[in-house]
Length: 236
Image (tube, rainbow, N blue to C red; front, side, top):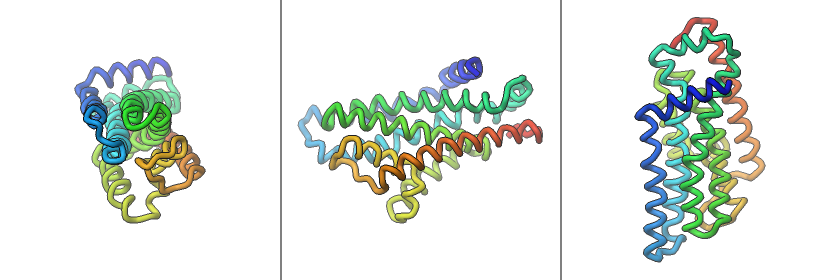
């Protein structure tokens, strides 16, 4: 399992796709730093930068890039066949790749959100945003890893979830908020460090329980789906 994780990490950072992880986090820190440098009140920029950019864009997009990248490229080029011929339980393959995806996503998103939180208010706010982004990384990674096994176009499917389900419907249809990872992240951050910058729409218990459900069911479904690859001889 550790070998699979090391190979996955090396492959992930060895591709140009890894360069896509840098611009958005740097933009988030840069905008927060500029606003702080010019003495702009966090009430004026916090929602746009931290919520609309950080939590609603940086976190899910990074998770999408990484989550679909740890396995999707192997499915696309057919090398998934070589992995499936190894004497490794499908569970171990998925868990190793999930661990890499969740860890990378958590670091890349939590660090800039922590910095932005400090610039917007306090270390407590920064820590709250970082903690919430880690929870979001766990849930998003499981979901997007599953997408890479369900569709030939996992990035497109992920963008539909982020932009349509969480972005469009999440703002106008109240029922969709209970199935939105983004809303869970906002709630957790807001409950840890209450602030006017964030406005939670679901309860804390719902956020925690549903985040766990997304994480566990997404991972189990991915394990099951990869098992069907080996049985049916699928490579895409």
